[in-house]
Length: 160
Image (cartoon, rainbow, N blue to C red; front, side, top):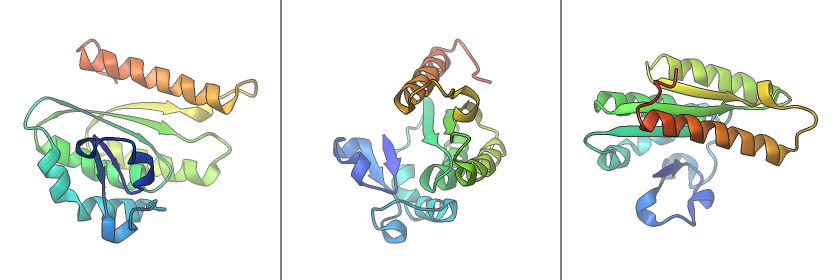
């Protein structure tokens, strides 16, 4: 299931696979800040609880540094953990040139770490080189996270 405050990126998904959170807080638009992302999650917590499985594994994926991922992810992780589900959180951190977003992302990562969730982090600032295109950098992060998540799902790695 894809969860976001901004409904536009979710439009192509079937209704049962998407959830736009915070309709009053964000009006179907970007959360713009972690505080609004957290408020949006709180507003839609009942809908999220209804869609969480009763058992099994849950993988949460997000890019940190903006509003929805950074603000909602820690509370969502806590909710999944409280449900007793096996949780993996996979996140990306912004490129080095995105200084303000990086600061926001690093603060959000600390909030995530405080939940006790198993976290896989891909830091674009550590892996991006001047010879890479933006598309190559994003593809590299996608491949990295997909491989690590697949290993975790198969029980081959604790992802730490």
